[in-house]
Each structure stands twice: as structure tokens, then as C-alpha cells.
Length: 163
Image (cartoon, rainbow, N blue to C red):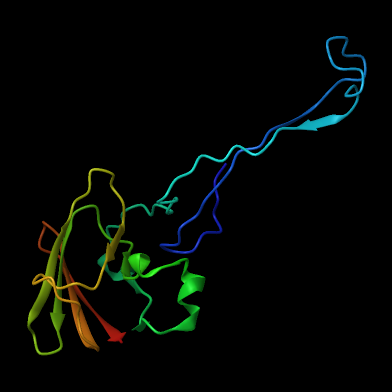
């Protein structure tokens, strides 16, 4: 079974439950359950990280999306994105190629961070925690993301951060 109604980057938790119809003439069943539907208790396996939908890599750099854009840490709708605490805050880069170098620059051209995206589980998703390569939280402003594949294809996108 696949859950296709998920939001990008949101955390999801699932449980498993089974049910079965007991035949009315089942001789091995408890007489009180014959002809009825039995439902198991919910099996919940605790997972502190939850499940995040995986997005397959895309080769077309024009399909890359940065979300949310603009990013506003004070946005009351942030919980709607699936983030329940500050440990989940960040920007999501979706529809990435399997292998790509991402460089984030300020609007003045200063390099903020560089990420080489080449995960063992090929996914088109990377979450950036808004921390620079100098381990500092970034300021409000306009930023430029530069994407470069090993073949030399490049693409640029802008995004805004409001604190």
C-alpha cells in the first residue's frame, strides 16, 4: 500500500491492523465469533523519526523546487508543513538529480554553503537546516541556489528567508 497524499518533507507515522471474517461454519472458532469480522489491536512500532516520502531523482534541472519559498520561521502555518518542532525546520530541495552539487550564495555572491548530493539511497530530496558552512544560522535575505551536475549542466534559483 502506498500513501500518495503526503506533503513534501512532512513526518508521517503509521500503524498496522488486520481484520478477518470468521466463516459461520468454522468449527475451530470460538462460537461467539462465528460469522463475525475480527479486528486485531493496532500494532504501533515506535519510530522517533517517522517516515518521510521519498522522491525519485529528476534529470531535468528546471523541475527543481525549493519549498517553502519564501521561508518564514514565524509562519503559523509551519505546522501544516509537518514540522512539529524546531528540529524539523529547514528548506527542502525537491526533484534533484541523483548526483548534483548545490551551492548557496547570498545576493552579494558570498558562498554560504555547499552540498554534494549523492546519497546511497538515490532520492531527489535534500533538507537544508539553514546553517552556513561556518556553522552559523543564516540571516534574513535573498539567496541564490546554484545546481551543477557532474556533466556540467547548471541551473540557478532564488529563494527568500525571513526570520
